[in-house]
Image 1 (cartoon, rainbow, N blue to C red):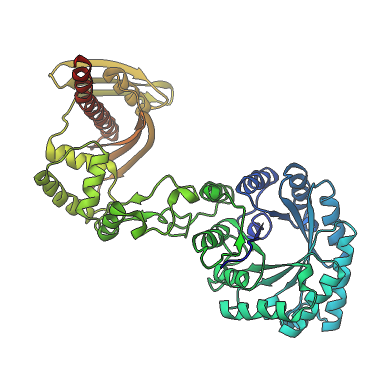
Image 2: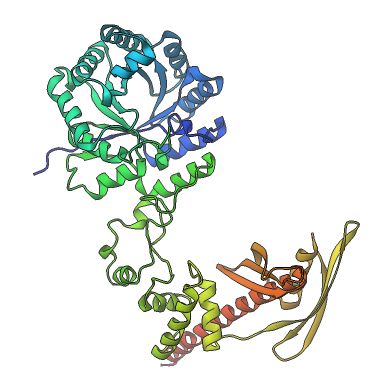
Length: 527
């Protein structure tokens, strides 16, 4: 039977250690935006910076401490007086402020970096904690490179800093060297050998150099650690830190293995917070990243898709909505099966007979061998060609474009409708392509928003045909259009007309779907 649950403190260091990722520096406004997102996410502690390192870091810690009032705001400092004073001053106006002091303890750091004996290290750690206590009662101490420190000496340091007044002691695997069972032994040993360990919260800070940051953190929690230091998307020095979204969802999903701990993270905000940090830092989230990657809830294999459609839990251990995704994604590609194709065509509004589905599936497989991913527009094009579910509402008759550096771009178009009737109109625009698109809209009465425009040569050489592809938004739908010509302006016109025809075809399907429903309602009313 599980005992009473204890609060697991989530200490986010995206703004401090995360910002140390090459190219991830943030300005004050960006740091404040991330801090507010972390507040909404529900993190308990935000390490906002290292105040002594620069005026910008000092201002960031000071501003976040003043404006973000729910979580504890933390500033980092070495066991050096000027560092501690800078951190203390930066946090003076914070509602909840913490000073995080650190000093390396491993033999390799003592010998090559600090040139200090063990006894000197102990004295410096005690002095650092006591100096920080002059500014706040909330003091955290970290023995840097703890995972490579001699266990007996580490225990001595931990006991000394707790006696000096540290309320949290963080055990870092600074270079991501340890293994889960070794970290398990180390943390377990501290709980066994440090007499006053019950007076402090034991934290962990694991780096991901061997890809084990989350595993090591979870191992430590099982041994009694009650604070995890982590970052959004796992960003940080070198290979990064323990990923907040991964460690939180591991504990939530496998609550059977962690029955005695709980955390206050609003997990539905994980995905939007991940994307915010990615946008601000410029560090892309890999597609197959656990929890928040684009592929985290995407399925292409036919067997998996069939299972998901029958029962989600066959291939998903978490609900996508619980981490901020709208829904699972069935990606159509060469590994996809007939069931997934039928489901997608149904969602797109196509009612297919079994023979029609068989015919479409064969064409789909041929196309999938040429393309990595099949989009809805591809499926519509296949269906419209194969099933004759739509036709040309408009086609290009003639085109004349006038443009130059000293003239206003103007396009004159002649379009022919499905009855063979010709319409002509002209429009100006910001450029020749814009003028063409405006003229098409004037003639057809269909207004769309251009979201993508691409040109490529279909073949090589000077006389190569140009292929233009457009992506447009029509009402709530994203549609595509394609046009080919040796003249890229003509290809542009054909692509936009193609997209317009797709919009009109979708509109017609919508009206056709509403007619039976309206007739049924009328019959019911008559009765």
